Image (cartoon, rainbow over all chains, first blue to last red; front, side, top):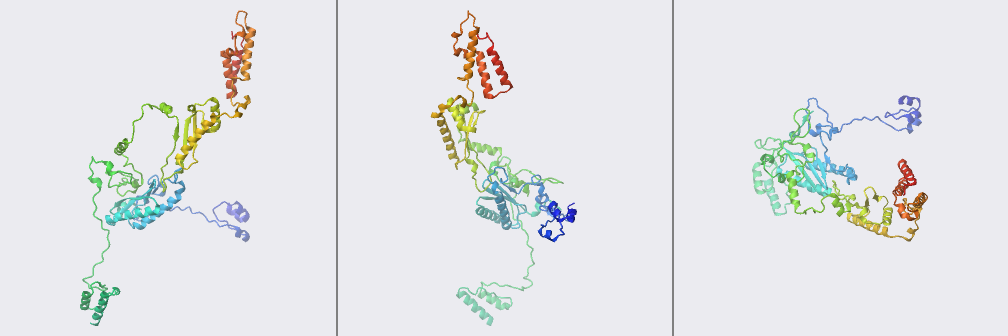
Length: 180
Length: 349
């Protein structure tokens, strides 16, 4: 309907159109004043994995469940009170999210190729608990060093005590939940 | 030989000087007899064999993840009568090697739910393994030495209200964040029943006017909320100051307060009202006109006695109710009945 409007009168189309589709204008004077719109794709892809032909792609439990099942089949990876009503950290929600990203990046770099689950960040009072599953690729002694190193550095950077609560699995294949 | 001499020269200078020629390396192009000689002369140099002998070549070994020797999970060695509070003393994420329970968590279309090993879902959720009944018993036992027995005089809530009429309400907040402070912790609510202040009618009236909407007449509670000071203690003291100031202010009588006329009353007051005088006079008139010769005359009946008649009392209540609570069907009906009763002649003898 809007397209036919556009053919009839560009001015009418400009005023009448509410559509996502772009409006083609015939008059050069009007065209220079118009704004460009493009159709929305509505393609939601985050957290969804493409299946392979012979079902060879291995997924963990976290990956195998869609994002919309958070709170139903799987729970959140960040636990804090910034979303609660009347919370004093309500205005710090953005800050905590940014720091969570920083913690994740720090750990991905420090514990390189060792975390086989998502990094879980739980904030209780002023403490930050970082949890997750690692694979046993380094000796226990080094693992303890990494725990202390991460706790110290993150503690200095975040200005609050940080504790790592990790469990280890012998191989990352132990984390495979399904193949798609 | 010339090369060997040069090498020995180099090595000699290297050892005698401050090892500035440490970058010199012997190459495999040097004949083997010379090489050995050179190595014996300069042992700190290592050789880089770019083309080693076939025997010396090692097969390329693929790097493998060697699993370290780990102890079996703790949970397999636990005694059934162990003290669990020592195993799990504080709040922490789930550890499958420590919990000797076949816990499972997760959803699976086919087969069993994921077990506890390598289960990140179990690590996400808060657990209460540190709050077992045994742990709570231990907590209570540890706290008991700081407790005193409950006073016997305060057996119930009524006794508590009698002995401790004032109520101070504050809130403590627990949240996750870098700061443990909460700006709302400073707010203090001070509650006290008005009847416990022992005010006379004038002071009470003034007190209520000063309080405004801080008085709840259904519960008879005064509520003073203070939040303007930065700390809780200051707000508490400010609330106490406010209550004290209000109390003493309401006890004062200003010179202009005597100018209050009947029209200024906020409620209808029967005593001294024109209605009272009219009713008393009317009743006395009725009595005078209807008195028989053998009965006591109206002169013997004082206005005070007239006011004590049941009919006059009912009329007083009806008028006060209608003027104070407002005119509605019931009050008007009551007023009508009271007037009819009062004016019925011959009932006052």
